[in-house]
Image (cartoon, rainbow, N blue to C red):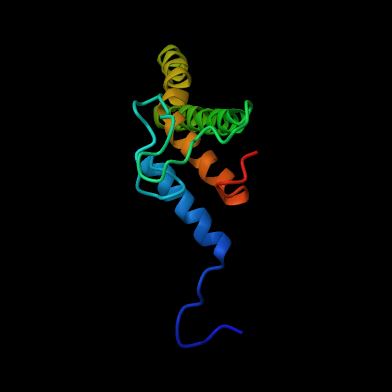
Length: 135
């Protein structure tokens, strides 16, 4: 039973998820939380410079989950931006500008969110498959 004096500590799953999200937003290694695993905006390094873990995780199809998370997030950003712009322009909506702005955002959003979704996917994978069990 939780104590009434202080705050109830969060369950480990919430702490792990929060740390994974912070790590993803900083684009750092999900294992040691300090190493820079990205060598460029879209280029993932071979190993973490601090702890030496390989981000590829030993599977040829590991990146499919990251691509799916990236697709969902990018499309969510695109749709919400479309709806928000339409509401802001209402009743005189400039449909041509809205169309081309949405197309441009649909192209740019996956590129802009890729490093964050890839690092988040890597952190979630390491939560369920700790380093050393990649085989």
